[in-house]
Image (cartoon, rainbow, N blue to C red; front, side, top):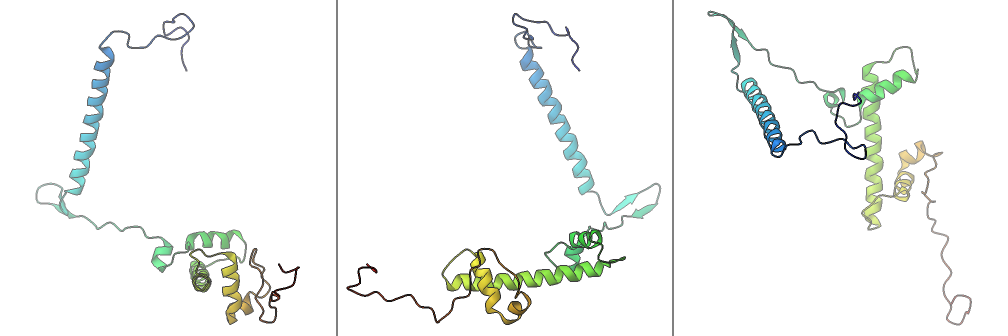
Length: 185
């Protein structure tokens, strides 16, 4: 907290700058710069010493202790070779109260199934988008990809996809234009 009256005041209640003398600001800037430079050098030396240290450390006369190789932490997702987050799915399974005890392998299996299904749907939708000469997958492409695949259509029969539309039918055709019909012109 600022102490009232600690800084001298100028006319309209504005505080005077701390470094009033000419050249004093420059000296303070140089001192601050040198302090930062010394700090950076110390960090660089400390980093260099830890990186450049040999694999062994001497403790005293003749005593040598081998450094243990550090184990790098791997997530459950990386260990399973998946892209979907196993830990997050595990957390949601536990919070959802789907059972008294939830195995970690259940989360791995569920993440693998969800990843496989999403890859399958995206592949089908991507093929439909390429057939329509489009670079972007839309909900219509996802809907058509699901409905044109037998297994996915059976499992997702009662699912409604927003902006998906309906399957095209071959029976409905637009009316042909007549040359003399004023309505069609």
